[in-house]
Image 1 (tube, helix red, strand yellow):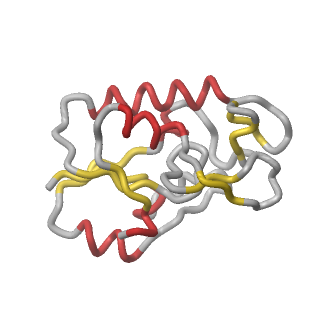
Image 2: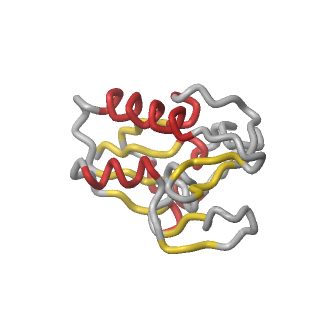
Length: 138
């Protein structure tokens, strides 16, 4: 089984704050499987650390008001290019992220409020026919 996984949930320090979202359940699930790790935000040229981002009126924006939607779109394009010839069985993505959120994302107010929705990469994967699950559902 070949699994695409958000790099942060397997311990890569690529989150906006320089940390990770290590998920032991995902790590255990991935044992014995072929793994392709990806962080579209890093592929798009975002720095570590960086300001937190949310989707505000359909556009990825940092908490300081800087619009970074083009960088995110570029990272998603490069991530899709990276996996285009792979036969991926499953994608496991980081919860709530403006990139990788599968079930919920932050509402764009930077207040911690969650809404039903998907991040840009999760949406692109689903549109391209990939089976995608939230890391919290593993």
